[in-house]
Image (cartoon, rainbow, N blue to C red):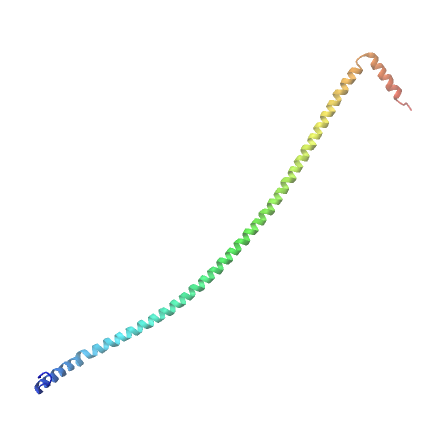
Length: 164
């Protein structure tokens, strides 16, 4: 039961030792502990502020990224639209150039055919003339081969000539 009802001497010694410990703590440890607690509180508040700023900056960056992504999509769409327009324009120009080139080729072919036709006609005319001359020469040789035929032909030609 001594533990439940402490003795007066024990109580005094306990109070005295507690007071000494309390004095030593207040004198040497209290200020550093309070200072450490204040420093810890400041660092926590600074960390919270930094986290808040970082969160705000991340939100700004995320918004900026969304904005940049949207702008990039718009730019991509514009580039694709321009590329399609350029492609269609090039195709149309190529078609027009092909038509012009085809018409030139056809025109040259027609001219070439016409020229070849004219050359062939001239060649045929020359051959016909040559053949006609050869035939006429052969006929004349046969008709005028002897003297009596020659005299008869000259007489007929003279009779047919009008001397007026």
